[in-house]
Length: 335
Image (cartoon, rainbow, N blue to C red):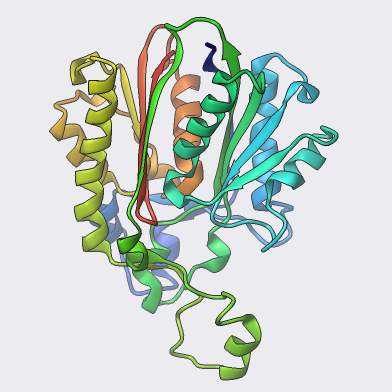
């Protein structure tokens, strides 16, 4: 049986930096309020006319990952694209990456698991590679959320959190059982779906209805989050799914070289760090600079940690995410 391992990583962030002080000029908030509740100091937003879309940013990150993997793009056998902010309602964004990279007829699938998307994508790639069906798989997480955020005081709780960006990984088949993805652990619980949601437009409330109603109080086409409920569930599920991965592989928290949690909120990451008694050098956070980039947050953070020399051969790397659905998961990786 084959195993799978990551051989190339890449990230792309838009050049446009939006600080908390910039947001102070638009909505009723403050730098101190945002930092205290989220840890975020700035984030990146695309700008109209800069050429960035969810797919194009994903392709930029992918090109870097492919170059670092030391393979040509035509060696990619499958594209898995995780996003909640696709370029089009249909088709999925993965096919645009396939076209940009010029990989004729390469299959592409989108994964819609929001913040957990990259973890689910890596788990999916791992299974395709273990069966021997494919040899090289490109897993992308990319988001352009800034255009769908209520940038008024009404939407403050959401507006201060989310950012744009992309990360990518090339995952390849390996014959060594002692390296790569050791296991993945995935869960969903739909009873909480309405606690973190973007309802419209949908097939029961299409754009024409929204336009004709012209209801200024309608916020259904903006993201909604029950922050306290999400926080409570997130800290519990993070702990559970990390422990599940460690126990499955007969490992302990002290064996973790680097935990890369989904960058949802610095307070969640700090809570998880304390639960596992991890030192600061055993957990990686960059939400301060980029905000919550949803499906892109883990591949961006993993790439950045690798670029900084914090991911080394033989290291035990743990990826963990929690997001809309609710869905949550972990990947246990021997680098």
